[in-house]
Length: 361
Image 1 (cartoon, rainbow, N blue to C red):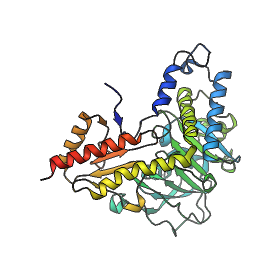
Image 2 (cartoon, rainbow, N blue to C red):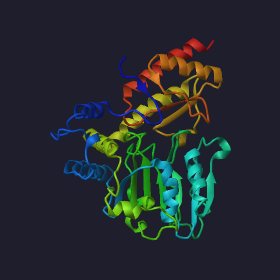
Image 3 (tube, one colour):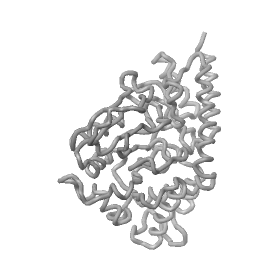
Image 4 (spheres, rainbow, N blue to C red):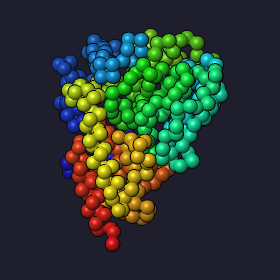
């Protein structure tokens, strides 16, 4: 069997040429006579890999010099605790709840201080992004937190919230590197890489230097202090070495494509193919209000659970994998990250048209 079209939300599709390169280097990386998987993280060869990966990411995102790039472990979920432990100096933070991951981050922050939900779209099953132009931001808030692209619900902040001068912290796991970004608008941008950047096991944290201090909450483990990782250039302990190597290859792939501006154009075209079909379909419909639609995660339904299940089953048989919606919402979801080729989306739409014809009377 050949490669399937993998619409998984994460771990997700990776660029085929990156996988081929990694395969070619599996037994002997660059004349070292060993795999990156076997290599000491203290070796010269590995030092080059992690330094290049960081530099390529800095180039892609135009990361200013006063921001550190950290390659960490524990996934995005560990950041739910690490952020308050390191940033909650006044023990107050404001959270905008636009989906399950923002909600989990908010609940975790309550362990460490006063977390306020200053806006939420829970009233309509997170199908929109609330108006964040004039929020009741707390006077003494240490930061304002968002999940910028909501993987489960398929919404995306097209405009960042007005934080009234407070530090913005954003989880960008599922829109990482999908379009250009102005890093200076954030205090912290972080994301688990297994959606749009690499294999599971790495989380990248881009953090402004003034937010990295010795002054963490009492009881913060050494491993959860940003300063420790920043001072040791992500090599305090053994990092997820192979995962970082693959991320580095993805950064080079993106640079070759023309960077994030070029990627955004591709992503917009790709998403339009699917959304345009959903907007005129008699059977399928998208679940998100138009102006807040994600370019990365596209949830849709038929309105009939049995028909949804039939669609997922038949799609799988036809080589379209992982189209089942998240267990909390049902329906379907196509994650069309950077590495999903345009052809995959076009073929999916063809299949949906055929399914519609066969299942509407």
